[in-house]
Length: 315
Image (cartoon, rainbow, N blue to C red; front, top):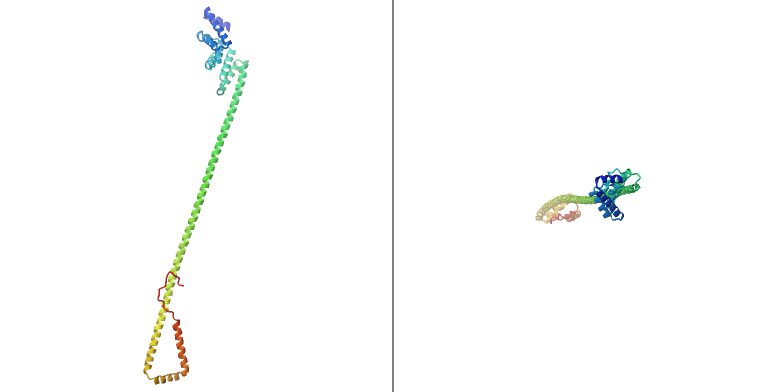
């Protein structure tokens, strides 16, 4: 390759240009060896950009210098210039370095693919194989961690869902208990109201019963009063008849008084004789009649002149 490139340069450039190219390559290599990566990148960049030297080794050295300078952007673009080469070893190194630059937690799959391409280009590239295995394990571990995180998230989500459902059940239970309490209170209120209504109905019935009893009492009182008035009327009628009888007897006595005492005695004797009653027996009968009359008069009920109080019982 170097011989072919030297011959190509000999036809393309003059002897002075070839000497300049060789001098720049030597200076760049010396600077890279002395870890003066900034000077090495400057020399190699001049060769590539100004002298248009697209040598695989120069490009790899330039890209490596950018890596040491932490210029990953220029390093990646320079390694990608080597990828199309037909030199499999140089291509493998370029892919390997691209894999190293992409060996980040968020870009492991890209890095693994670069190492895989490096092994395809050169299966003997030990560094590429080692990096491939390391990144593969990292990726597997990452996937495992992601699965664990997903499981944790799922478990947490399930737990939160269970807690939420439990809270909802507790709230529903509290609401049911509250509703049951309200129903019990309402039932107690209904029972109290029913008792009150029953009590009011009982009082009303008692009032109606009492009123009926009062009406019956008044009716009975009226009947008693009518009976009493009837009795009084009968008594008064009896007294009037008795008075009339007494008046008749008194009249007869008055008439008899007008007769002479002798005539009265004579008539009395004749009547007693007709009745076959001795004067002594007649005297006893007269006295017995007078005592019974006095007893009858005492047994008569005195007439009530004061009206009865209807608020008091008739007994």
